[in-house]
Image 1 (cartoon, helix red, strand yellow):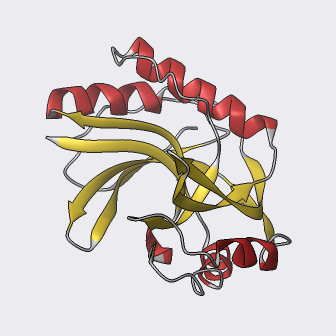
Image 2 (cartoon, one colour):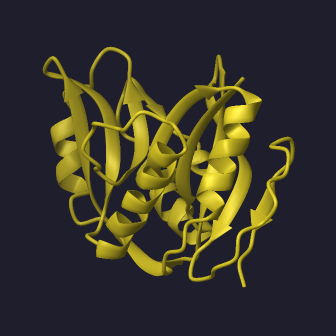
Length: 197
C-alpha cells in the first residue's frame, strides 16, 4: 500500500528561510526543512494499481508555471487548541487553478472528492498538547515574514512514510508545468519526471 499526496516542492532558499522560523516555542514538534512543501491534495492509502491510475491521471494535467511568495505565519486550532503552526502562501490564481486541475483529475480517476477548503500553507510545527503561551509573541515577531517570489515549474506525487520521528516524504513522480504530452505509466517504485513536449 502507498500513502500518497500531491504537493509542490520548495526551493532551497525558501526552505532555508522557513528554517529560521523553527525555534522559540516550547512543545513544538518542528518540521524538518527538507520535508517542507505545499500540499495540493491528500490522497491517503491506495494499492499499487490505484497508484498507477493516479499517476496516469496526474500526468495528463496541462497547466502553466507560476511564481509563489510565502508570507506571514498563522495556525490551525481544534477544540480551541492550536495543533499546527504554518507559514502562509501569497494569493496566486494559477496555484488555485492547478489545485482544481489536480482535484478534477483525481476524481475522474475514481477518488472521492476532497470536501475540505483549499488553504495553501507550509506546515512549520505540530503541537501534541496545544501551543505554549509564547505563541502570541511568536506570531507577532514573525508576522512580517516573507520569502520569494520563487518559480513553480512542477508538482509532485509523494509517498508519506510514517515513523516515530514523524513523517518522511518520498518523491515518486514529478509533473512539469507548461508542457503537454502524456507518458506511458511506469511503476511507482522509483522517482522519475513526467515531462511534456
